[in-house]
Image (tube, rainbow, N blue to C red; front, side):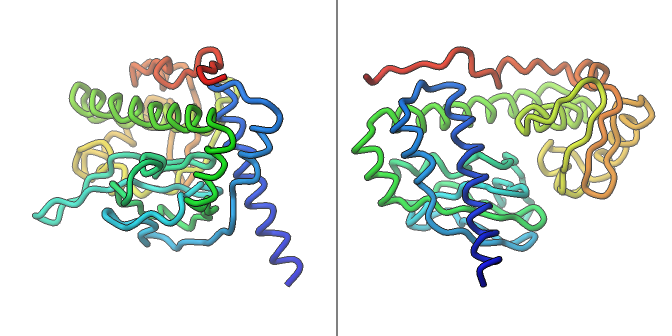
Length: 255
């Protein structure tokens, strides 16, 4: 039992540390405010592949801090077709928009096995009352999420299939902080069908595009891992500019 408890503590501590690192990039925090963020988490759970973590319209009892794995934000049409409107990586809170909403506005599905750390609504609100700048910090997180969504719309609306997919992989690499030189790798457990659902193409076009990226010696996807062979070429093919992911200088409006 002690080893299980220790592993859960490691998940919580690791996820909290990544979250604090993210927030510190854009919001200036005092030591006490940093400690408040690190102490927000309360419990954790594991979700199996394809299972829903959050369903749209649910009352909000806790927020999901992703500790490990990947989540997808999904929309299902009346016809039964599915669109993935976002992927989320460790350290992100995909339902942060419900901070001031009574119910969830999105559905979240596990891509592979994921570990989620809970941030209970009551505890979050109590911390914000004690440290109002935390509302500013999490508001910025919501704005960044909205900015990424706008970039996805532009990517799907303006790019052919292959650059769309190249752009997706380039973005995820930056968000996961895995870019190391010109060649590196990072986990990406989504299937070709899910990639197709994310970039608005058919699975056949997704497969052809992945093959084209391999033939260009830019990157290839194998067994849930993206192997970037030429980062410069991948970003060129994607017409990728990471400015929309930049945090610029950390700020603080509330004193």
